[in-house]
Structures are given as C-alpha cells and as structure tokens.
Image (cartoon, rainbow, N blue to C red; front, side, top):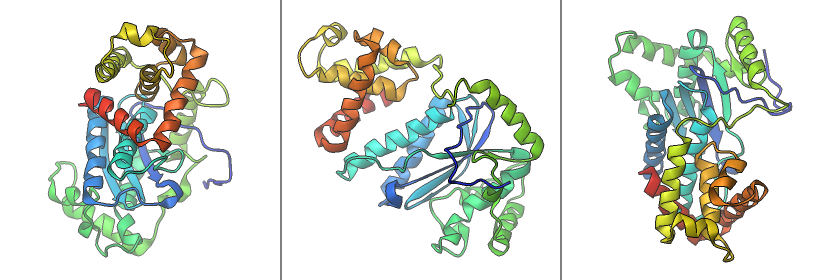
Length: 310
C-alpha cells in the first residue's frame, strides 16, 4: 500500500488508545532548534502536554529542522496535543530568537499505527534518523533521541540488548515502514486498517474531520486564561467585555488565547466576551497577524501564557 503525496491532504483520525507516528518539519525546511536549550525546551513542552492531555510518549528524535514522536493517546485529542506542543514552542522560539511568523511547515504528519505489528519497526526507524542523516554512525551517539533511554532503563517486557540489535540491524537493511502507509494516515495490517476506517466513518460529519471536541476541562481552562488576561491588563472581566474603546486589544488577546488553548466554539467564546460569534474569528486573526510582525505583542502573549501554563 503506497500513498501518493500529490493527493488531497489526508484525514486526521482523532482516536483514543491510538498509536501515532508524528512528524513535523521547519517552515521551508529551516532549523527549528539552534542551541541545546531549544531541544530541552521543546521536550519540556512535551512533558507538560503529557500532564495536560494524558498520552504516552514511547520514542522521540529531534533533528535540527524536524522532529519525530511516537505517541499513544488515551483520549481522542491528538490535534490538541500537537497544537499545544507546536504552538507553545513556536512562541518560545520566536521570543528567544527575536523572530516572527511561522516556525513549522503547515500541518504536522500523523500516521495511526498498528502497535502489535509496527511498534518495534517504527521505533527503529525513528532512532536511526540521525544515522541516515549522516550525523552519527551509532544511534547511541546522538543526544536528542530516546534511544539511550532504551539502553539504560530496564523493562520487564523487553531485553535491552535485543532492542539494540533490532535497531542496529536496520543500518544494513534500509527498510522504510512508511512506504506502506495507507491513505496517508494509517499503517498496519489489513484488519487494523479496516477497523480504523470504520472508526473514521463515525467521526466524519462532512468532507472534513471534526477536529475540535470540547473536553471537560475547557471551562476551567477558560477561567484560567481570563484570569491571566485581566491580571496582565489590570482590568476586571466586566471592563474587558463592556469596553468600547478601540482597539479592544485585551479582548482580542483573550479571544486569541481561548481559540488557541481550548476547544470552545466561536459562538461560546462570543458569549463569554460579549461579541457576536461572527466577529470572534476576525478578532483572533488580528492577534495572529500581529504576532508575525510585532515583537511587543509576542512578549505580551508569552507573559500571559506563562501565567496560566505555570
């Protein structure tokens, strides 16, 4: 099964207890990590995402201009997970390096994988990326992957030497498990793919997959965001929602953050901030554009986010 990447973009299956191979490149294939602190900060955001969104991280490899993650979700929230990780890191990187605009290239790639059939093969593929890129000769020499953890941490279900042999064999075989991806987002046996396609039928409501499910923590999350915004601008929520002064920057920032960090609909956000839902999207886009050109706005958003992200 091969996928023609000239086809329309694949669906994003939002599944619970699904194993995903995630990959994302820098915009125009440019570097996204330029110093050790960048790698550490990215991994810190992954840890924070694990605490917030309840998933397991089985493997990772961070190269200078892209990253690979092997994630198993516990809830149908892979888009929320990656939106948080990529969005938080982009904000950090832009402030740290005094730059503007997008850091990563478009949508991240997510492939749902049959854990029983492909877990070991895909782990080997991820950990051998630095070898195939000519950065190191042995994956154990590469600092920014999880391979060393496989060697140094005892697991009752696996043998460390066996995993090492399995990975090193790939240096001779040149196998590429991603050549068997079905429809751009599924990797596994025929039975596995058939089952996941049935799940997808339930999920699709139109030509596109419904990405934004409102989870139970959105109400509490929105309260934290509102508190952080009103604290930063030193105004009450009443003043924020009732003010007619232009530009309504505090309200626009609040809308941007609610859209970015929660699954609330534009209509619900409009009810919270006292605006018609048709104006909510425009307000959020105003801040998105400012974040591409205005350093002070980047610092403002970074400060507010740090207050409710902790």
